[in-house]
Length: 296
Image 1 (tube, rainbow, N blue to C red):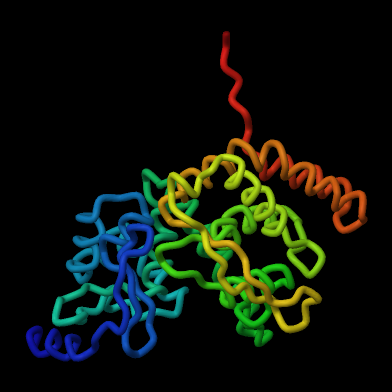
Image 2: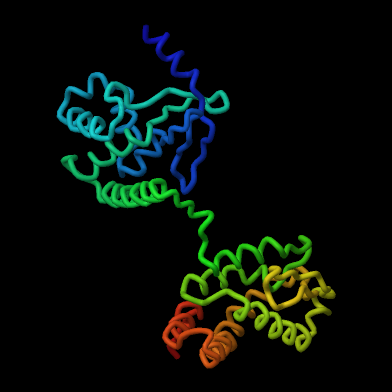
């Protein structure tokens, strides 16, 4: 009978299987999210053999004190207490898939009930519990976070989508994505009146000419740059630069633009009323890299 049961389990396959952040996980073709034994062990802060033994020998483990506690938690999660995992296939490779509900029950045990509870398990349980509540509220209210981006993020995404450059070149706007993300996170409006890549582009263009970088890296060239339809700025042509100069640009950003010119740009926005004073100075402190003081 065991062989027949295993064969039936193998009829279910994994639609997605990957290891984001080193945690092995996936989704079955019936929509059930799961972790592998190794993935769950990592969340619980225990050796993979602990989870493998627990799940593969569940029928003998469930009568022991640990097993009784976990079985109670599995039932509370609304999951099947008779089997802790499902044997499935992903691209013809066997996978022991532990469903999300079984995972939460086992994680709860190692977080709070095990004789030597795991701080890692507690942290992960709390994080996943918060995430589940968030998903519950999203689903209950019909909220789709992908359709409700804050205005600054929506504009940033739109401009990134509109402006691509050939692979042998880089653009100032494209290379500013990391700075832009940090700035938006720290309260900078990314809108029709605040276009920081313009400030960077002008300063870098002057630096390029002053240093004669075209001699070292080759000529820059103009490339179409588009703005959203409802913006006052018109589509234009902006400089793009040879990819070989990318390292020099990044060094200039960190050593020249951010500490010397970015604060002036933000202060100008404060004076114009585009950014509140407290938020502006907080933004400067958050984005400008700290200068290491060397002892002489």
